[in-house]
Length: 175
Image 1 (cartoon, rainbow, N blue to C red):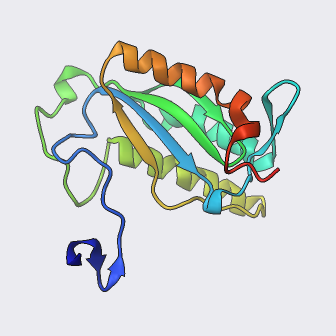
Image 2 (cartoon, helix red, strand yellow):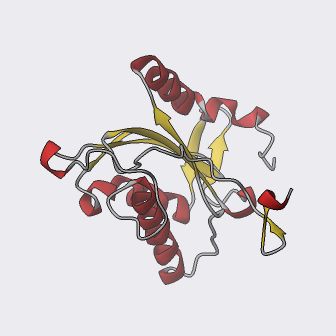
């Protein structure tokens, strides 16, 4: 099991597609969790299944919606903030002239790709939390899925939109 150890510590294997260019045009479904899945973002109203955002929850919404201002090649699709995580679909839409034909996912500086967008978003929320003296933290990493077809996109959109109604049964719901 040495392949699961790095410097004698367990590591999490990458969940990314090995040979996929995450800067390529396409749709990406992401889930980003708060540190220890603590419900920093607010509470779901049981009667309406709508999130009442906390201050850091509203900051997170504002930062998410501003992603295209910092990354003009990104278009936002369905998005849902939950008490301890968020789900969103991002589309990378670069003009053909800016497209790199095929390039394997690689280590090194990451620019104009999904990792850069998520890193920028998380950094923006963290900066605003510190400026406003709000206790907050992100879970390291994030989950992503390359959306492969329209059926999958429709299914993911429905999942995101219905997520608040399922909060009461969520295993990470502290209530």
